[in-house]
Amino acid sequence: MKTTHRADTVPVSGLSIYDLVHLGIFEDGVLAEIELIYRNILLGGEPGAGKSVALNNIVAHCALCPDVSLWLFDGKQVELGLWRDIADVFVGPDIDMALHRLGQLQSEMDRRYTELKRVRRRKIAKTDPIDVIALVIDELAMYSATMGTKDQQEAFVRLLRDLVARGRAAGIIVVAATQRPSADIIPTSLRDLFGYRLAFRCTTDSSSDIILGRGWATQGFNAATIAPESRGIGYLISEGLQPRRMKSAYLTDAHIYSLVEYARQLRTKKVA
Image (cartoon, rainbow, N blue to C red; front, side, top):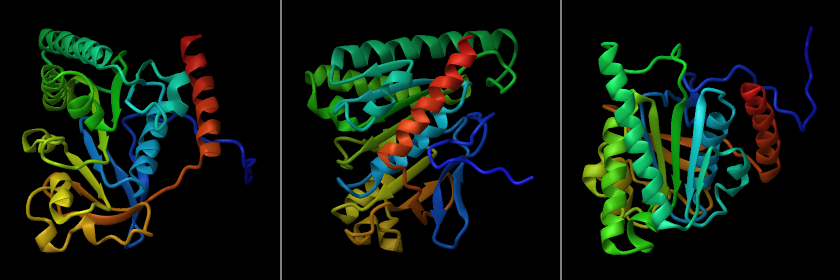
């Protein structure tokens, strides 16, 4: 029997962070899906290029996964604000709170590794009774270069680098986005730790390379050549592969409101 769904419903159930995350479609028609578990992803691009759309696709997947604890950092409070009610942690434009929460995550990561060592395991598994923590940061520059003192900004980057470098096997996924892809915002030592990187339209060749990696622009994978009207178009690169041009799936605010309500129901059932 064919089942139909109303336009305002979300027919998703049994989703897990161990499932592929749908981002959109590659230019050859193949679905753009990534295995986010045990990985991290960095997104960048100028305002209006489509970064926030892609970010919301990732947050939507995490929100609909009962096995995910959702930690949202949003210095502007508007891009991730629609998900605030179902987030386990929400940090706004508060560098002190951001540092406090990153410190908590670092301690949790160390605790999990101590337990893994005790049971002689290298990483958590889907069958473990423990949530994966998705740390989502929108506008990285707010915390790493704008708010607070220089010491606080450096502390933020240092803590974040540690979580990106060591968190994957402990079930801590970092999703970071910025509209200011520059070396002072995303040092190479941090960028290269992200297994996935997604570059939307950038203003310069060097900004594109800041996200994708040095030299890709000269090889024809240059987000600065994406037309301004081509919103949602970007280059996705994963470890050891060439960048691939893709278009993000689009979520309207109405879609997000429906997803938030559905996620709330899923999480309520989990608690019950």
